[in-house]
Length: 91
Length: 268
Image (cartoon, rainbow over all chains, first blue to last red; front, side):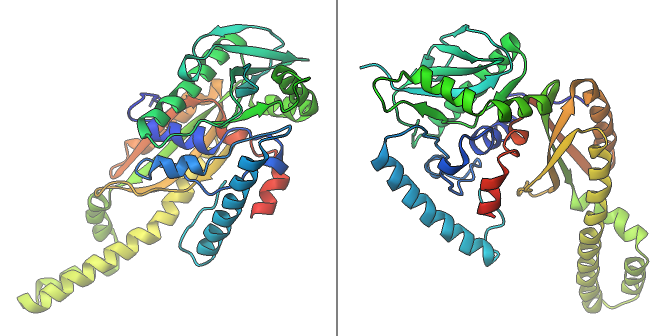
């Protein structure tokens, strides 16, 4: 059988990859959030949880606020995962 | 004011200064920033991530991200794909954002070269295998001695008792399917793995009412082996009760982050 990349049938495959995978920059600066972008899950949530790589400086306010949120959400997810409610954390 | 950010689509294993045209997110001009034997594929943007509450907008961005990577691969060969919304920026007016990108390529050169070696001549494919419990139920109840026996007993019972037996049979079939699912998984995984250079087991998702996702894989496959994988999947797809979803070729999204091991360990 031949692989397909028909945009309709494989949109989920694409979103899973582009939003959740791909190379990440400097590991120390990754904002880890358990945003698992699936169709059907509100993409807003997915986007809020996306890793945005800001390297080489500024943007402190935004960055710190995001990190604080990210850390908090991550801990909540982790707690949920430990209880078996969520089976996957970010990456 | 000049844009201080550079949205990065990926890194190509080619030293070339090129313009790919206005094919970027929201029509932005995409160009390359070379360093050594590599070049970053970027567009110029403000120092803030792309965010939107509108699904369609996001889907469009994501598709564009992919289109740019496709085009980059055609023009430049092997490309390491970045995740969506990867933006480098310069906070220092004396340093241009392009310089910042070059600085990153220089700093991460070895790691990027290692990734290039790993993915060169290979593409990623998504493979999902589903089974249809209802289609398999008959076959299973014919093959299982325990279930056959229950059914034989059921035939001689009164309607009330037969009803209870029916439920018993259904439970037994379900349990048997669950047991077999483990065997199917191992069998299919082994057969698929033989055609892949690397493989990632993904989380399975809820399918629809008539089928269950048994396994979901991301496969890194050498170009000359794709047909073999396709043939193997065809066999599985032709097996009664099973179906295969085979997507790709994708840029090797699932195989470029692995080398960032330290951070992942910390998370887990």
